[in-house]
Image (cartoon, rainbow, N blue to C red; front, side, top):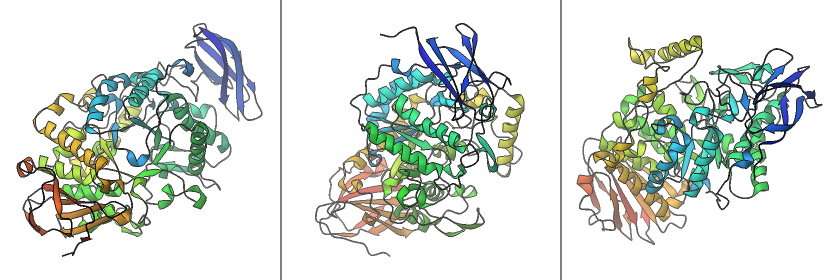
Length: 611
């Protein structure tokens, strides 16, 4: 039985401040002086705190500001903070045990544009659509409170508070609980390298930032300077906060290359260690930690005991770049260091394409080899919020290539030896854009964002301006059109994704993530073979890809057990193909812009003569 009031201890870190006043704003306004502790915190005990009490702090009589550790900002980034009684939520997922990372097929979601309503609860009715095609993990773009109602989430300023316009804390809990009931893991995107500019009040309390480093998005977080212990604890506790109070299954840390720490134990090592310790203590399910890294450094996913950061996996941008430019050659204007077939081969067999070579865009030698690292340590994608949203028109792949190429692309991603991730709408070929949008209340900041986007795309736009990030039309243009997925070509592509994911789940060759069980054969600049096999070598999956406008005649690899058809990407080519039909001839014609998937029988000896 819940009560209308309860005892609450207010606590805020402000090691350099002399005094702190707690102001309870509602339901009755009153002020309470706080006591400073030896560890730099100020505390105040309130024995009769009403539910949903709103409050703020006054450090050194400098003004009233929201709580840096606020769990809810119902009135936005400039309003008072509100208490959240987490134990009142009635969870129904006590039997949920999650999945190992290697079992996941991920699906990235932006809450605001996934549905017309743009809330957590509006996602719930769509979960069955995801389950039906085989999605078992969603990755949610940041939900930490940001200014306004329209934002990608990377301008968040209250890491512990759930965005009010999305539905706040209870909305997120309802979504996570529903996901677990449907058999879906939830990965949450978090940002620990910077805080956004508007509503950023943490600097009024403590030395959260440092001048020793800079990020492209603002002041760097103080992870290794004076008082860094308190800052590190603030962000480490934030990670545990999502696991403890929201039952999140994993975190994706944004741009870890902009997290600077020259101490003996890197912040990233410490946070991964603490998360693993918490997972062992709770003992219910694996807690997954994924990094976005621009370093091409194996240490990101190596164990802490050998000097690694200890992440379970990282996003593999090189795979995207290598595949994207082959599918869409004009993409070389954005990824000028990619475009060769041997780079795509390396992306499949090694991981990092740039592993110590000179890279033109970076003007230096870059990266280290990831050869031999298991495929489940990498998350791959053909589209995500960055790669689409940072295109000058927010263009999705469906607007850049034809339908046949989209099918080949899906097979190339979902049959790769990595953990795949789709971007919302990709499964049916959504052709609405995903643009960059904001709703800053500060006019000067809004204009700076507009000018920044213009400058970024000057070489691509000519005299044209990119869509105005502040315009509500920019945001509304990015909302998914769910009606498409059951119609015509969209429904066909949706079915193709469903079948590919089914193969991924059921074929023995797809269960091995060892690079020694992967062979990539270049047949020409537009045609390649991908051979996957299980750890015993008894089961093989042969994937043939042609992205050219012309057919290609090839001789199949020798296989004593023979090959049988599994799927053909183009309906007109595959309409007479029944799964399990033997391939009648060693010579096979690979039609234009087609993927053909074959399966090898048990005890087959594979040998490929490279032309």
